[in-house]
Amino acid sequence: MRAGVAISSIGHAVVLGWGLIAFAPAAFDTPPAESMPVDLVPITDLTQLQAGNKDAPKKEQAKQTGEKKEEVKRAPEEEKKPKQPEVKQAAAPPPEAKPEPKPEPKKEEPKPEPKKEATAPLPPKREAPPKPKTPPAAKTKQREFNPDQIAALLDRRQPNMARASEAPSQSGAFGASTGNAPRLTQSEIDALRAQSQACWNPPVGAADAQDLIVRVRVQFRTDGTLSADPQLVNRGSSPYFQVAAESAMRAVRRCQPYTLPAAKYEIWRDVEVTFDPRDMFGG
Amino acid sequence: MNEVAQGALELPAAQVSLWGLFWQAHFVVKAVMIGLVVASVWVWAIVIDKTILFARTRRQMDRFEQAFWSGESLEDLYRTLSARPNHSMAALFVAAMREWKRTYEGGARSLMGLTQRIEKVMNVTIAREVERLERRLLVLATVGSAGPFIGLFGTVWGIMTSFQAIAASKSTSLAVVAPGIAEALFATAMGLVAAIPATIFYNKFANEVNKQAQRLESFADEFSAILSRQVDEKM
Image 1 (tube, each protein chain N blue to C red):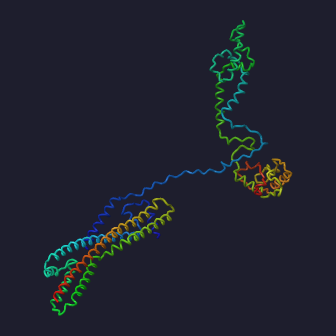
Image 2: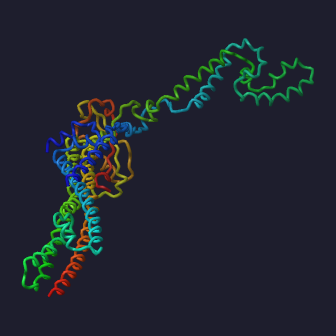
Image 3: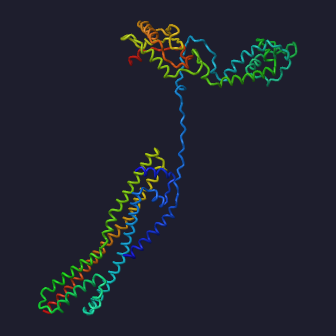
């Protein structure tokens, strides 16, 4: 038995020693998992809704692309040209310098006629083409070659492009009462609506609730009270509309001290509130 | 309990070497591991011992049967073996012969009970020899059946350590979980390492013991037949 114990002990020692060597210390190398970048996007960017107002003063449309702007601009430029002194009239010949293809068809049209006339013993052929041309403004524009003008045209292009590439959100939408960010977020508009609708008793039982949507223009002071009487914005065909509009305006007046973010006073100074009976009754 | 979590926490760069696995374990798991190593050592000691014993016993039985059936005088055989019966069959033969001679040399008046006495003595000797052969085999059986459970206990404890490490560090990263899992699996591995050979060799040795006991019994039957024939001739 002693021999067995000895042999067994030696065998285990050998196996364990081999294990110690074979499974050499290898630390758990756990590289930190790659973090996934998450952008927290404020809801304001998504819910910037502009209340359209048809009565608002019209503002410049800046949402056009550069190309369109260029053509629009070019027309008045050409009209201006005749006023300039036509000193360099004789320098006409280089046709490749002419920027627009538009005048060329005009040129070809009249040309056959002067050639027929050229058989007549009238002045040198150079003088001939200008005569038959009916629009004199077009004629002068054709003739004159003013490198400075072309440079001006080309230069004009750059600001237009730059203008077109500006962020469209900076410019006001058509008819918007104000074209400036920041705006009331959806939740703040909802808050305003909720506050005003809390005091609203719409005409219960009136038919055609969708015709009773009342939009009221409200102007505030900084402390949340009304600076002017609310104005009705829309008109309704329903006989009950007047009742609903009266009740809506009464509600706006009744709930007066509104709690709205003071930092955005410029935005809620003049807003429209929509009273929709369907919101009230879940219809 | 608290030191379990701390033990796992203060070793963020855990090692998977055998020594590291053992050293980082909770002391309960350490005890389990040490116990399983000791059990394994003991199992293999028994296996080696029994292998040697059975091989030698078989060889000596072969040699004895050869001598017994060679026609050699039983008196001579008894004289050579009686001093030191070194294996089961010799012990059986010597016990039976001693009873026979004692009856004869004592000058018994009747041989009536002699056959029964010889059979009894041989039965007792067989039982003693079989007991000697299968001694410590029970250890193999125990380790074979309980080893996996003991290892499993260590595993459960290691998993608990892992969970406590998770709870303490509030993180489920590999560095936090791995040490506990590794030591847990290591405990189970050691339990299996101890239990598998124990079970295999237990089955083998139990079969061997059965065969040798069978052989002893058949020899006892033959020898008692011879002796009883002698008794009948003398009467």
